[in-house]
Length: 619
Image (cartoon, rainbow, N blue to C red; front, top):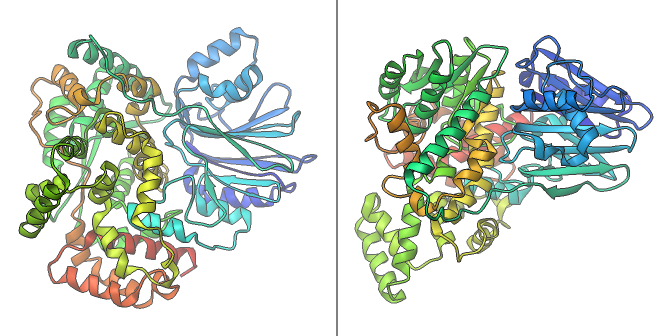
């Protein structure tokens, strides 16, 4: 796990060294820079030593010193690739997974990416052809930002790191700011800064002097299909085989390793497989809270006892929130309004005292139909086709007037006459969409309409003639997963120099998941195959637990220790000063929340954006 950077017009490596210093947190153990003085190209890396601790220095090169590479992430199948390369006559100087890149490039050129299983963002400089190849993993576990200007290229693992080496003027992109408030994250391929892009997941970038970078796709999440005659038992057996292989590959490390355990299905299944694959008791880590009703420490503790793991439990006290949350949110490279990010950071910091690598359960919901929203969207589409539009509108209005929340309110959304993407957008961002009418300042007057937002999601979700649940599983894999879930995992863990690995995002697991009908995946309480597999591994496990996300008591925090921070944002934060947020509307929203109404859906994005912007502007 590392941070990487580079610039194609940096013959003295001045910019690359500045970027390396700006991302010391991503790789505290080592740093390296290579410069092709004739071409003026410099690439750099900060290293968190995980594989071949002594011999894995970056950048790495081939035998002739003509090809150089830097890698952020892990190539999990590197032992097999190393053996294959040696059989073909390559001389490897280390046991590092990074070194396979330069030799695979000699064999296959850009097609080397198809041989890789892992989480990665890498760059390869070919001094013979004077070309640079960059690539990002299939789901976007590792970040890659770049800026192209006057035929030159600058890239880095984090946005603020790139800004340190690219001489950017700090201008924000209003459309990206608007999308951030709607979704709670900045979806790629754009970024919060004007002129900076994210390389999309499953894509590679080619650059040569004087030309704009060429971007092309090498992989995308496959469209779900019907498994035909295969039985649930057959599918569960195949899933078990693939997951066991994936977990074993993610347990390879030359440093201590642990498991994030919430007590839910996803992490419990990973921990159960890891326990059987390990010769020593695995270390498990969980986080809870001393306020609210969302702590899962008791469930995680019971699961750890069943597994026989060496369990570590952190309670994040209310008294610590006032210091931790603003620090974490302000330290991000671009704003992210996921309320659970500070808690993720806390448990990552806690785990880092004992381990260097942690294994998590990210991606299971999106691949195996875990979100209840998938089932509701399918039901809504089926119901929408059977109700006349006037009757549907009347029913939705009647239910909305009688109920503001709960199942009846959800039923009102189901019967309302709207497209599936409109309904999806209302369910995931409805409160923020409503709030932006009054909350936005003058700088966001040109924000996109709901129709434009829907059109953007329609393009990602694909044709409307397929399975409804499958369509939105694909949308989440391409939009929500890289934009929020994986960005949260990467930034929160890298702040404390911890590597997080995700077995569910093995591409063979993902491709298998797509062969299972979404209707089967989302049946019952969802994640049918994962539940069945877990019941086989842990028959005594309580599988009747309801589906819960990794949640935090955000409303309590916003009324308690974070209220003064919000008030400070309203009164003197740059978000209001620069005209992104209307100060009076923000103050009114905060007063409503303090009086008992829950306005957290709009307040948290405002808080995260404001704290990030203050730090970015140097406050």
